[in-house]
Structure formats: structure tokens, C-alpha cells
Length: 115
Length: 111
Image (cartoon, rainbow over all chains, first blue to last red; front, top):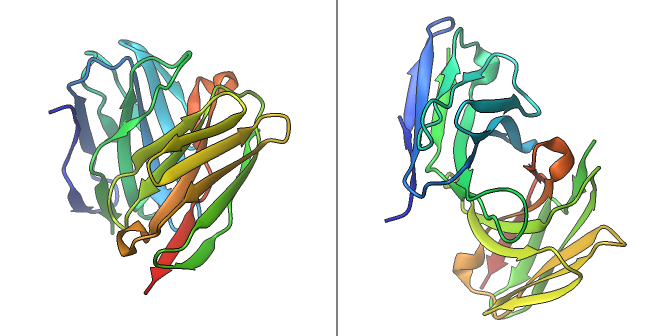
């Protein structure tokens, strides 16, 4: 089954304790991205990657890191989480990004609470 | 910059037709997408428009006018399960082909 898998689904952590949210896709997609979703603000892109070893900042990258060492995986790293990073996070992937219907497939989401 | 606007909330009756509008101003354009999102779940793809006109897909249709920076999603024969948030998104080649989302329209379908 074609899917994007995020782990964990739920996480409560303390301020300053490094954490990683994993994302893996099995569709051989080139383009992967991370979003956060907050009430009243909608989905905002954190980072994206056009291919292996190619990453770039989205609209709200502060406090986050990513890496793309393999095509299928795109982990999101919070080196020193703070309460304002409490949010619902989604990983998404799509086949290419140039022309045609390159719909994004989303993971199930990770609800992160930083206390 | 990007600006994508949708109404915050709408209410409609089961069996009726509802139109959800989206206006956008983005530095680039490479397609407009509509997604459905139930509370606490992942967005799921509904439709894609890159050329002007209407795309029909069962009970759902989407329209695009690039010159007006305008799209709408039309939902026919509404069902209770259509109660969800509907997200308009524009793919912008000038920002790394990012999908830029509006804040979403929360649709409530009533009996």
C-alpha cells in the first residue's frame, strides 16, 4: 500500500530535550516536506526537499532541522524544543514538482506537546 | 509573498450543493489543489486544476480562473460525512514548488 508513515503519532516532551520525528514514504517520491498545523493559522511549511541531499527552508524553519540522506526518509529534528513548537506536524511527499498533477500524500500526523 | 483566502466557516444542509471559494495572490503558479481534512486526520487530495475551467470528479467539481486568481470547490448532494475542513493550496515554483495552503474552510453539514 502506498503510504507516508510518521512516527510517533503522539509525543509529550519537555523543553530542551532533543527529539526526532521520522517520516518514510514507499512511493519513490522525489519531493518531501514538513508542515505544522496550528488553529487559525492553517498548514505552514517548515522545510522541504527536492531530492536526496537537497533541502531548503520553508516559511517557518526556525528551531527545526531536517536531513535527506535517502530518498524514502525525511526526519524532522527539534534540537531544543520549546513550548511554541507544540503543534500538529505533517510530513508529505509527491512525485516530482514540475508539471502535471503532483498531488501531495500526507502522513497521519504527529501531535507534539512541549511542556 | 503568498496570500490565499477562503471563508473560515460554512454551513449547508444534507442533500444540498455548496460552493467554497478560494482567492489567491502568489508570486508564481503551478497548479491549484483542494484537499479535505477531517478533524485530527491527514489532508486527503480532492482535485487539481492547472488550466482555466471546470474539473469534475463525481460529487466534487473544482473551477479555476488564473486571470482572476480564483477557484471554487463545488460539492453536490451533500452527505453528513462531508463535514470537514477544505483546504485550498497553490503550488508556487518561485518558492521551491511549495504547496502554500489557505487557512481552510470548515464545512458543517446539517440534517
